[in-house]
Picture 1 (spheres, rainbow, N blue to C red):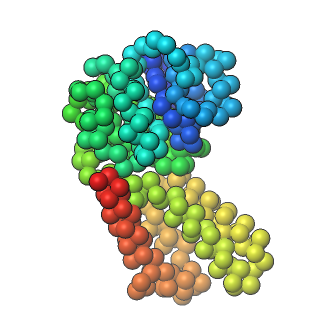
Picture 2: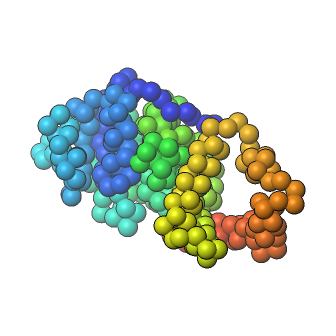
Length: 278
């Protein structure tokens, strides 16, 4: 089920704790505030906060609070996965049986989270990607059995602040999700790199080749985003029989070409995700 971006988060009730305000955590925070979430409802736990996060403290956001803290409606865990063992146990002070924990840590399974958090905690595991920084990401989420429909909806609202949201019921799919959409932006950036190098090899000035590759990849992605037509049809629309595009596609779509390479690449990333999850 796909959840489209929600416009406002003003109806969010209770307190929200964000643990980790790095690139992805900060992107989520910016998205929530842009959609009307009251900074006074937010607590950020981040040992090295950026200036922008520090500035939000003047608007009522609580930053690294000391002393007594209250139970949160939602705790969002956005720390690096290698920090999970140290970061998760102290979160018990924010959690009771009504709290949702939303984790965007790569590779950390629901089982791992359940062992590290108080018994009976409602948990949603999600995998966003880096276009979240401009509100154009996509996240895939899976919930444990303790998560209510209301909490799933709440997780959708929070994730939709950085892009679209998809839900799956089988957590084992998250390794392939990580390989496709989680790592996917790197594949697109590599395409732009390779196109620029190929253009320079064909005789274009290097800086012009870089600009042409960048704008072609960005513009084509935006066309795909705005169009109701599938990618295969858009490709066919550009390809005239016997033309230059057809000559190039004969190479890219031939034996050992683009399709085969990407299939192998995503399979390798899926295997690595499983290895990292243990």
